[in-house]
Image 1: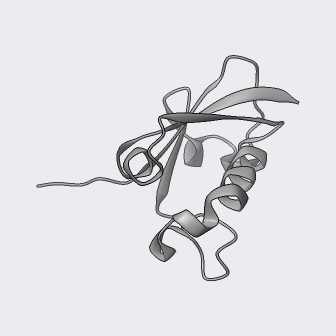
Image 2: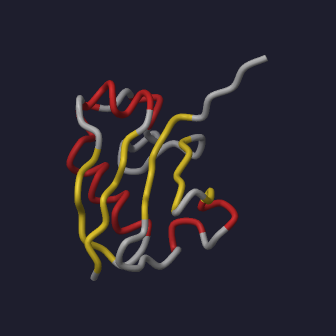
Length: 93
């Protein structure tokens, strides 16, 4: 297991009043599940799935600046010094 800092962007930082938390895990999914379990009650229902056990699929998760959708998604393996970020998707026009 590696220690990873989960960094919060925009809404998550505002809602939790934190910039980051440290977790241990082997994959992105390990870290995100620990985060959701710890903060489920502080997150709006729109950010979680219907069972409130996982993040909504529209949440953006970046590992070292890359969207995990283009990696191995939640199964992406972590290494020491990796940078993990969580954000809501923003759009504009």
